[in-house]
Image 1 (spheres, rainbow, N blue to C red):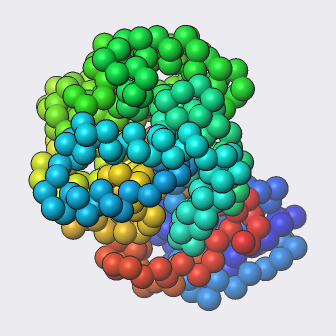
Image 2: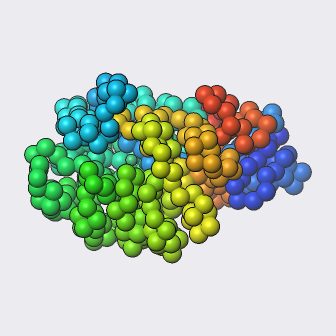
Image 3: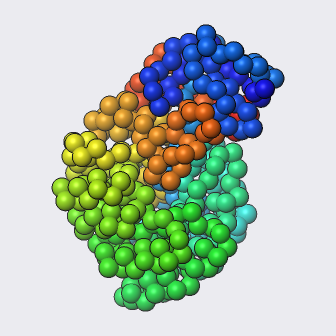
Length: 393
Ligand SMILES: [Zn+2]
């Protein structure tokens, strides 16, 4: 006996061809049957009529900085007057202004801010949202951010430790000493509290070097944690190749990644995570190497990169549209980027990203004529139902 079945649905399972008249059943929070309606012979306690809606896997947003305090709209105004992201960062603004506000906020305040932000993802049928630390840059605040992320409700949360996000003011001019602190104290403490699902770093001229990043990755490996990397966003520091060398789940941004970096990603099986929100908001012009990623069969995921400084974007749907308009992804690639490949970028390919028997019954119903409409429309939200662990939300 299945717990529930959805009939009269069009199914984009992302694991095979679309099914125009499908049935999808759930039991024990997992998908227990999926296929052509005429082949459905099962029994279910509850029968739902999908009324011809499309059922797609719940979106996976594999790169966000959702937990933070403070406001950054004034920097937006400054940038519009000509200041660059790097100039704002060097002048003590940027990330460090969010660090000050996040350190000052209580766990309860951070939780209520982040939970409120998360509503936008829930409304678009998100099933999984990754949340990074990296606005504490001290032991207590990094752990506080990760605890807040663990307490967020409504979707499955994956936490990523990003202690090596920026250099805190108290370590000015002493980046190696800060990396010692991250590797010797903060990351081990966060891991001991079971607050960390993966470890990330910002490898960039304005952040940390390849060598410093490699030290963080070595510590992650000793703790048995997978790694990811903010790589080659503003310059080609060889970040993608470094991520690949460490067997990273993903290398993210990649605007400046050169051909050897892409070949390394292809060999390592790491996912390329493209972040069109930051590209758009920073008015970048250097496109990520899409055709090389395609020709090397590197899986391409998309994410919102939601953060207060460079990508205040709260909509997977809009990110899909941006990926198509700005990066020339196809709507099909954009959809795979927020489902099957995004799940892989979090190491969740066995439970999320497609509609297959045994995976989590986390999916959304859409009132659209074809899945391509999701990437095509700007500012519309045709989501008409969300199901988490088999339960209608
Ligand atoms: Zn980021």
